[in-house]
Amino acid sequence: MKLNQKKKHCSVCKKRMIKYGFTRKGTQRWKCNSCEKIELKKRKDISKKKLNNIIQEWLLGFQSLSEIAKKYNTTRQTFTRKFSEIKIQVKREKLKYLPKELILLVDAKHISRDEVVLVVYEYISQQVVAWSFQKRENYESWFSLFILLKERYEVKAIVSDGQKGLQKAISHVFGNIIHQRCIVHVIRFCLSKLTRSPQTEAGIELRKIVLLLNRVTNKKEVNLFTKQFKQWNETYRDFLKEKSTSLETGRTWYTHRKLRSVRSHLKNSIPYLFHYVYDKDIPKTTNHLEGGINSPLSELLRRHRGIQKRFKRLLVSLYLLKRRK
Picture 1 (tube, helix red, strand yellow):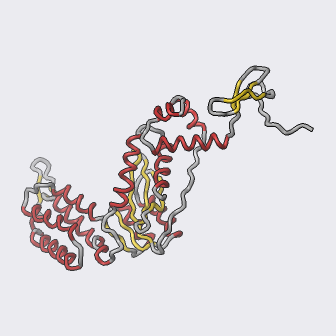
Picture 2: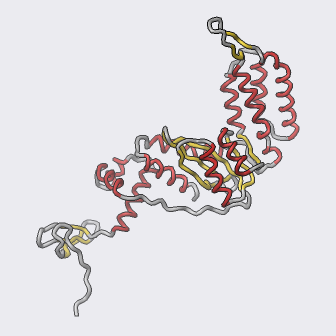
Picture 3: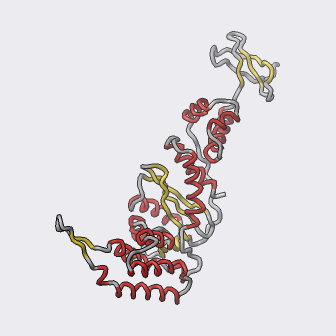
């Protein structure tokens, strides 16, 4: 009775091969007596898993594809060909413990000219809950993502940069949920309009009020800020109504458009600015998301600029899943 032996057939002539010693790493070699081809017997599942690990090492690491190829004693062209041939699978990491009511930080990150990733970060458990690839950041893209979140989780509050489509989607999906505007974004917008050295008295006074915004920590300071802004608005009401006229065309416009823009921005933001004062669990900025998640992601995308769109999506997904560990 013959014992069962491992069999291998030649990839060229399809005939039986015989064992032909070992490689330096101890891998069994096989030789075909017909065409004298020498091969190694490889398991497809192991090869695919190894290739997936190499792709992750490349996308999430600091080395270029050429350096990775040199490390594995092959060429960049070989890896490029192999990467294009396989369907890359992303292993989903489970979420950590989630609180009963979520406090979400949301933001959009451009990964190319025609694509953004919408990222949702849970503040208490400090992990990325969800993300979605979209062509642009607008009401429809946020609405579809929020619908999925509402079905799965109980959301207590949302912190955002106040993008118009995002605000509309929050109100339509979650109703009167607590929506905290990121104070850093509000200050940044206002200072970009006012500049460092405003040329008018109104601009100088308004800049002082804007700079106080980040120091508000209690109810008394909230009332003081809103009172100062209201007084400024009343003092310079007529000044902001001034108009200029073109001598050539006769067209008119508001002379102090940037000041009016800052006034309008603050006026619309104030109802959403101070939820963190009344509930200490709610952060006043999206810094945990932008600084902790988006900034390193930007560096990865910059390092791998020029890669295919599918690899960009894979890079983002791998990175965000890695942040769940």
